[in-house]
Image 1: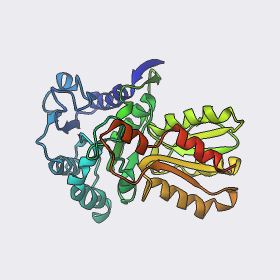
Image 2: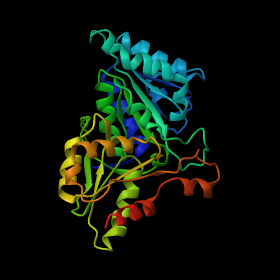
Image 3: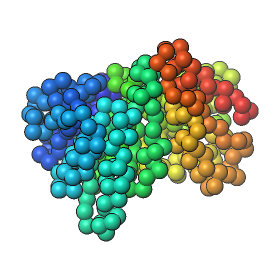
Length: 323
């Protein structure tokens, strides 16, 4: 085992595939000599040169469009956007082109592209740089969506994302880049649609992903003092989704709390709640609870941002409401 940070894990996954396959290349705003907005691509420019680590103009539409075109032509691009918020500028290229081309060409074309999307609040970046928009992406047929929470998963999911012949949205929480973790000496690709049980329990299931995995584990420690045994599931892959792990856990605990950092209205957790209600309703002994951010733009003020975003205390309160 070795230690590295979440950001280093993301870079490690990209570097492994770049060493193996000359068709893999990275591009985005300031990803070259500067090393990326959050330093994730630092060192790759020196190692691979400006042909494979390319700076782009300030145009997310052009970045996503170039990813679509180069993937269709046989390359395996990794496009980095500085913030997931800026994906709005490239949504036509992503939603109406990348997500549809394989279907419209009858499977005769492949779109092996990865879009890296730093997301979430907590870094005092205000309303236009702090959103959690995963629900938009999971709604679109033709896109795959993953969200690692730790360095090991960051590597494994990146390897699978680059190998996949479909567009993969690779979401990264900005507050996790410096978070360290243990990583195996040889990390294997993590299959999409395979969740990870971070903590086993018998009384209630918390389902989450990304930064909220840490909030859920903290909440589980607090709840243990009241003899509430929590099971925590890290989805890792939002689509495809590991429904079986979810259902198996609910059949054991009979209570479920869904947690994400999204504004609660229209959140991905709403889709999860509907799925559980439709397919696992009779295993639930209490209402399905959701925890999310308040339905407001993310404030710049530190005090207000902390108030708007969900935390471990919110999760504790949601769990206790079920008993």
